[in-house]
Image 1 (cartoon, rainbow, N blue to C red):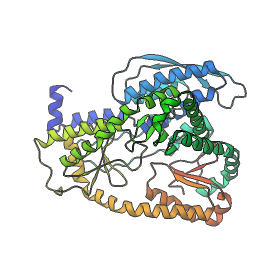
Image 2: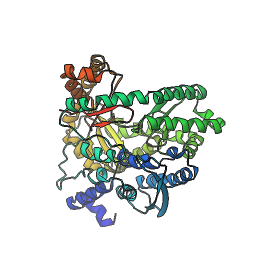
Image 3: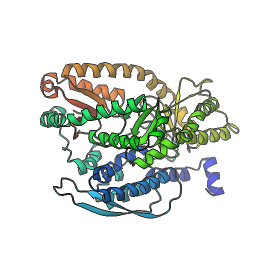
Image 4: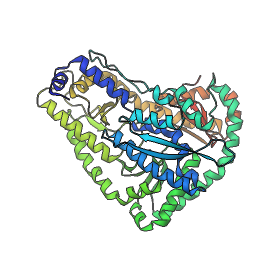
Length: 479
């Protein structure tokens, strides 16, 4: 910022703030949005899909290293060096084993543009990214309660490019009836894969003395097996380096590092070499984890003892990035407190409220569970105004959340028993109240749905989809 722009921020110039925030939002994508958007790309190029073709596999492996580094650099708002990478794409539903070579230019300077460029270069749909909602801030800074939205139609279009996902139907009962038989057949065909996954999990946990080996990624069952096989190969070739994992939980997720719970997170879209680097440097990754409690306490003290927490509906958060976000917001809050007092409407002690600190860019919002969620770069005056305007709504949501979770668990259990389901799960971004609403809708149609859902697998999401392993994804607000 120039000195004049900095003055405008301090005095609250509406036009500059509005334009700057809108510009940031247009270019910003969260890590989970990037993961969702690039899923079709990873389906087509992941090296584990080219085991019988070493030349294509090695090319894709090297290119993925460069591409993942490029994306990580953009996510941290750092300058990038333009480059070109080559990938071989697996052709969908192709009887022969022909591959298509694609050259991708890594020259975009914002993450949204980069993701669009990657998908376009591979002739994959960019609709999901193109239509992500831009959150605007009004010129008068009257902040309203914002909640995350998920466009089911856009997701389906993106997902269908790689899996021929069936289109949406008008009603839940019609859709389930139409695809239940196919779901049962797919589930039965996938059972050997599930059995192998269980065997590999048990074998690896026993060999490495792991607490658990968890799949926390949106990819299907076959990809979980592929990750386990790759991890097993890594263990075989580097047994000494793997000893550091004893007593820990290993999670296959969308990023790599150490989570705030101390779990070792490995990006399921990366190659074995990247995993090995994380494991070899595990002690370094754990250092920020030790500093987080003190930083959270310092931020809490600076905001009337507010509880600094993590978002309830999101994947594992990495300690290294979180430490950086805490430091940034704490520093800004200290500068603000040196010149200002908190509003009179605030209680002397804010320990009943929750504050979640996330990346440098993102929405300032109140979550469905009543948590204040702020990007670490948010101007403190804006954050204080938002908290002031939404204190009562936050209190109400926090009070209802405990009851919502209790009700959700009861309804899930009732649906499992009533329909004889093998599993009933939900996506992280489906709230307890939304999950409960979907369960009630299922229970309203017991006579119609029980015969077709027997021994079925259901996931409550924001879209309709029949996965390759037979899991039926249904939107929480299905009619």
